[in-house]
Amino acid sequence: MKNLAVLTSGGDSPGMNACIRAIVRSANHKNINTFGIQYGYDGLINNNIKILLPEEVSNTIHIGGTILKSARSEEFYSKKGREKAYQNLKMNNIDGMIVLGGDGSLTGAKIFGDEFKFNIIGIPCTIDNDIYGTDYSIGFATARETIVNSIDKIRDTAASHERIFIVEVMGRESGYLALESGVASGAELILIPENKNSMTDVINKLKKINNKKKSVIIVYAEGCKFGSLNELSKKIKDSISNSNVRFSILGHIQRGGIPSPSDRVLASILGYESINQITKGITNKMIGIKNQKPILINLNDAISKKKKVDLSLIDISNIISKY
Ligand code: ATP
Picture 1 (cartoon, rainbow, N blue to C red):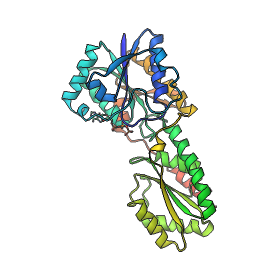
Picture 2 (cartoon, protein in one colour; picture 1 turned 120 degrees about the horizontal axis):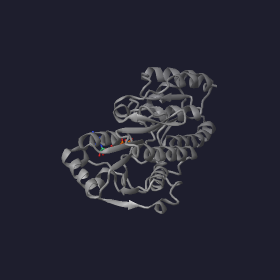
Picture 3 (tube, rainbow, N blue to C red; picture 1 turned 180 degrees about the vertical axis):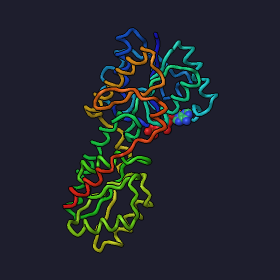
Picture 4 (cartoon, rainbow, N blue to C red; picture 1 turned 30 degrees about the vertical axis):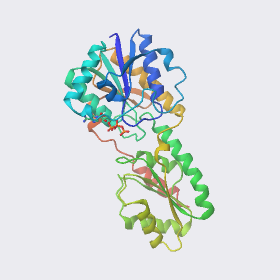
């Protein structure tokens, strides 16, 4: 193996740069060139591929986002698009590719690897932490920290004005981020898609909490189905007399920012290990982390199996956050 490529695809996540750095430098250590593909699969299709030298990744470990840029690529869903991508890799004499991204990006990687018998390793990068087989994905720890810092600030206002604050966090399919951020910020109520609550349940729980305290934080994963936050706020106002309800959507601040030390360490381990494995001839796998050690997961399992959230955290939170 002489030439490898790396790309970042789908939503960016903090720590992607630390991972690219680890890949480039670990490959260089084994006398392998790394080619950076810009704009994810779109860049692969358009031959936006150039060599990435070890010194070019200097001073990137602490930067959020991705120096390789990211994109969602419609063309890569088609066989024709993937064929173009393959021809570009062949033209550049590239023998293997490391894909950094979420479940969509890893699905694309698996399909591509199978189709062209191409050496592929995936690395889980998503703030959602919803990828099966790995304890953590790169970016999750930083996003959780950003959310907790934001909620700490919102709580000052909630407490001073005795308000009920709904804070919407990212997580369309998975409540992992909401759950851990909610516990870490002492939220009185955590609503996630995996824990089915009716509106009546929510109101009843809030009434109970509101009997003891007037300032309440509700962490709300965006995938919950209670209508708009306006509607939910109105429903709470109408059901709890004298309640003072506000909501805040944290939005894209959750994705960006300086990667936390734990994301940088994770990114360094997974990036290094991807080179270690691909140079041994391992392909069609994702590198994950289990009990702080890197592990290999079949790409197929990573993309097809569902990672479960630990619902017992909700029970713990209900007991310790009601006073
Ligand atoms: P995030 O966690 O932020 O959503 P993601 O990696 O899951 O990140 P997606 O938008 O789902 O983001 O996927 C990124 C890209 O991966 C898509 O734009 C597409 O190019 C490719 N991709 C996803 N699914 C497939 C598929 N079934 N076949 C081919 N390519 C795919």
